[in-house]
Image (cartoon, rainbow, N blue to C red):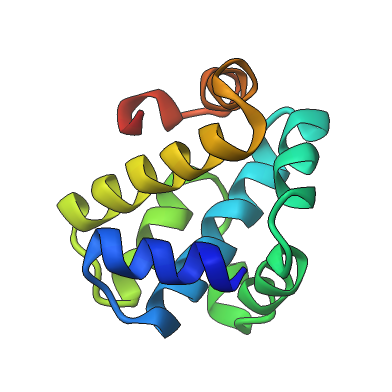
Length: 121
């Protein structure tokens, strides 16, 4: 997770703590909405990803009130202080990292099979 956090913070120009929270939120969304076998293979290639997802899920009642889906993810990311262009940039960088870890085909399938992600690819 340190590798991904440092890489994303550098590429997206955000603080490491924000990068880690963002990673947890996005990976949690992929886990709940994407193709489970492919997403789990990606998560398994990122040491510390499970802890980041768990930390993002334990953010209290506000998350439960927002519901689910891509809109809830966007709202959660914006509550960290990120704008739409920041979120798009972060998503693209995470997908690039994912391609390096699981390959173009598998990451492409994750993006294609997860609702709303194609606009960020």
